[in-house]
Image (tube, one colour):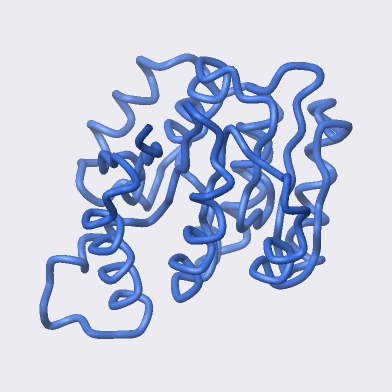
Length: 220
């Protein structure tokens, strides 16, 4: 189960991490294998250890209401849904019917589909249309990089006490520290990371999981 996102560790160390973590369950393993077979676009999939971490964190946090911005083929949503209790709910926001059709198959296979609602359309529109009372215990952002700040600003006020926002790709294959790289996505990630670090509403720790994962909580 090689992971191209863990650029900061060797293939051998990454395999050691996988071998000494709880085994990825068969449904998630099959989903990751099917996604990997798609080719280069499979880089959008979370890493295996990140999926395990997200399931554990969802469970430990006691999350009931969760939201995901960017679903792709469903590995992250499956990981979150697995950590939710029976009454838990996950709102998934994505723009692709094609990729989320794969996700739907695996949600059903894992018997978590009853916990998940999928909204197809721009996530900013979905967030803006939420009822004023909608709040979340857990949020995961892994979508278009230019939209990260917009999604974050929608979600911070909706985060319940003790809630968590997870943000993927914050290391962006290490290019965030390379001044020679100035493409739009890299600049957007840099701007987002700087914004969060300076935001006195939240506490954040950036973790070297997969392609970098920021763990954000709102201050009391």
